[in-house]
Image (cartoon, rainbow, N blue to C red; front, side, top):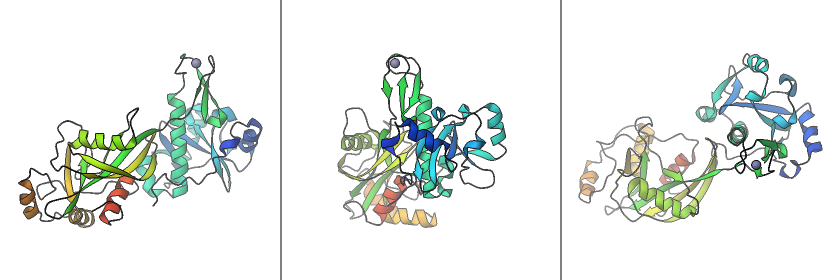
Length: 330
Ligand SMILES: [Zn+2]
């Protein structure tokens, strides 16, 4: 199973990052490449959705302390740099060669190498930008260890890159009509008809399993049990990792009034397949009326059509795997 950003093609060379002699040698090699990040956007070629990798000669007055070492491919080292570290004239000149685009919106057009490296670059540049000052004394932090740590210039406190864990879960249930269904929700600002698995951040002092059960209860009032870990996906928007679970529900009645979801529904495999493939509404009137007796909300003719969230996400993997009976009990 592969998702966007989940394949890291680079050797991170973690054991060498404190070795300044080694780092400078990699920095100065002719085949070393640089990728630019600017306010969360990545630098692409003008005429195609491909990252524009730059050589050192294209970046004026660049020194190794301004750069973040990402790793080495078979072709050489790759560094990331926040474009704001470059001279304004250099920034303007580069704009004639490339364009700034959102990684998230263009990931589907990228190969696994580019998506993985840009995600790492974007995540680390964001971390540097949001940790410029020491969390203990408030003085300036400076980049160290090839850009994988920051050290306070006053109290010497070290800060390391952080990733926020978020759980994302497909909740399933065998209903009394013998049809297994899964629980999907949507937020009000999503495109019409898009439903996705539920998700939320892990609280401090909380296990991943407890986070799954709490988030499902908070968002839908459904009781979820026995969360089982499936897979994870780096999600640098701006600094998360999505931890995918499947869980079984022991209740049916959905209530979204206590949380931010606009709507949540139970979907059968038949509904998901028909909606996803044909974008047509199937007739579920019979099963709707049967289950309505229990106060159960299932997707029906009167509900928005289901459309899969983007295919490179762990959400769509969980839904597709459940559709194919590759995960879950039912
Ligand atoms: Zn400090």
